[in-house]
Amino acid sequence: MDELTIHEFKPLFLTLDRIGPFQNIYTIDFTDANHRPCNFYMMVSPNGLGKTTTLEIFSCLMNLLGQKSIESYGHEDLDRRGGRAQLDFWVRLHWQGRNIGIVLSVLAGTLGEEILLKPWAPDELQKYNAESWHKCGFRSQVTGRYESVALRNDDLLQDLLATLRTAGESVAEENFLQPSFHLPTVLYFSAYRDIPYPNNESNDCISHAVLDQRERSITTPNHWNYRPLHAFEAHSAHWKDSLDNLLVWLKWLDNGSFEKAQELINEQIFVGTVKNLKGVRKNPPEAIVDTGNDQTHRLDRLSSGEKSLTNLFLRIGAHSTRNTIILIDEMDIHLHIRWQHRLYNALENLVKNNPGFTVIMTTHSIEILRRFTAAMSQEREKLVLGGNLIEETDLS
Image (cartoon, rainbow, N blue to C red):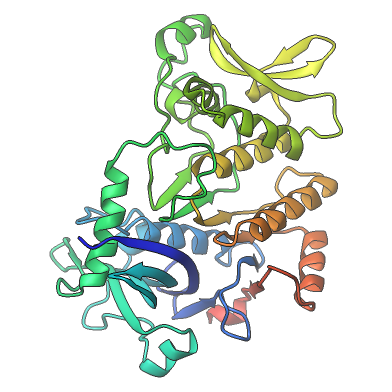
């Protein structure tokens, strides 16, 4: 396999059909008027019109990258209801001694003879400075099986997919925030960003003290190794899924990762308060939040807003690569308006300081929507803003 390095990996379009409220072909454009991929994007609609569905399908398609075969897509509308979708990316990469721009389309669903929802003609590729178009993903068969749509004689695509697979199979102990790690990843945050006590769910009848001794250990957290998609389950109470385990693991690595996580949380969440992320204790292994006056408590004792932000920033810090797409459903949930603006500022700065990052979020906050709308009317340094308003008339 030829050495391959990805310099940019940006979403262009997501096309949906027969999925949730999108019963006709509906395309979401992640580019601006000059055909530039947006790096700061907001989706708005009334409840029930498909914001969450859009992020779910985006995640589902990203999860197909690098897989040789699948048994399901992981989404009911794609697996059982005849849905279909196509996710298009702009990719700039180095391959076989050349820097190349391409369009990569990830396909899923009941496509039949219509292999594509959005075909890319040569003049369309030229608009986006792409010299070739490559297709991967899986098509549903009437037998219930899934057929790969990746062409075997497409050497560039096969090298790209093999690179993703190889990275996902290796065990990594990379530093916190890995600036040199070039492969793309999507971090999907649902609207429910709780931090439950890590009680391993099935043992609810056992006391915390017994669980602390029996179930907790210094162990590689889930989501640690490279994956094209990290979808975080807010309500999982298993130790390997917990933020406590993540922080204990970073402390055990003893390579500066914990200190970077600690600094990030204290600057973004606890600045201006008496609280701070103090460290981790050994028995039981868990993170400690200092609340002042020599008092401490666990992460699960934080307020709803503090939990939401801690979840976001720790996961972004620990699992990002140089090319990261962050999907946040209802970015404003559980947050006072001042904290909504604080999160908005932090995400904006994250994109400015990391050229390979893209943030796609949804909101119900009128304040945040007004701010974003005002920002879209101005040219912003290092920011390419875009948005999508889903209305009932769009779905008819």
